[in-house]
Length: 121
Image (cartoon, rainbow, N blue to C red; front, side, top):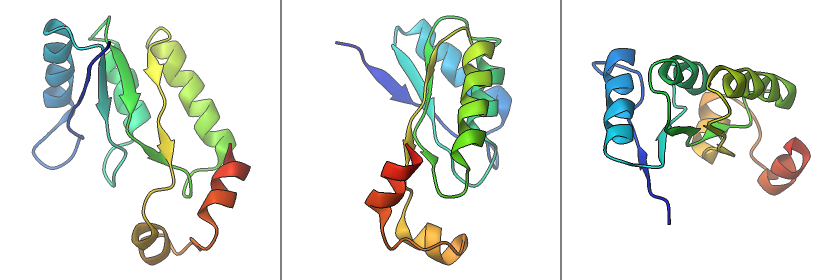
């Protein structure tokens, strides 16, 4: 069995230095994965590419990148770039997000989320 840990995001008082240190500590303690969220702050895949340059062994993941605001080709290209940058250690988590975020904040319809995800994949 592998056990992963969910780290912090890069926002507010939690900067890139702090999240990188948290990933390094998770690696040191023997966790299999270190994941960060894609919220409204820094881009999670870019942050993971930067962390991966300093933390060499632990698998790095997103939990999760919302599909609605990011075109599938854009996400695929960025995930591929991150995968190359961190030596094949990317665990890409994607998801729908939440109806209130998608409709009220982004202005997209959340009417058929299953169809959206099927088409996205």
